[in-house]
Image (cartoon, rainbow, N blue to C red):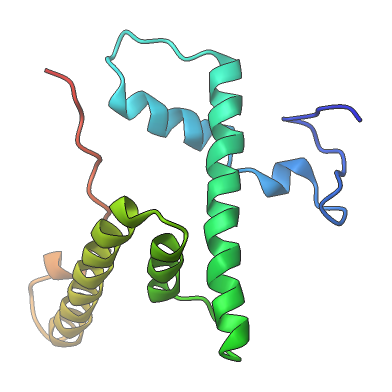
Length: 141
């Protein structure tokens, strides 16, 4: 079997194309660059390796969350299911911060919705900006 990391051929995942199974490599590279010093270079092989790892991790966690939903006869996986799956799989270091983030995100969504309802008749249009994820903390000095 040929290892075709960036190709568009089918693999053993039920005919799913490799490019559809993996996160976009440009996004992976962009995230990797955020934590490294500005003058650091990242090889194509490093990006491809990370692309495989994070895609596998996401699939692993999502599969666990999906199985929980299936057992509960639900069709929609939500953020709480992902947090539960992280904890169940032993990723407690990720599960707790993710729960806090999810809780804060939901609070901000409620605030944003409330402000939009009020903002339709007010002059304050700054409250109608979409929610933006915070940038990761950098270890740069």
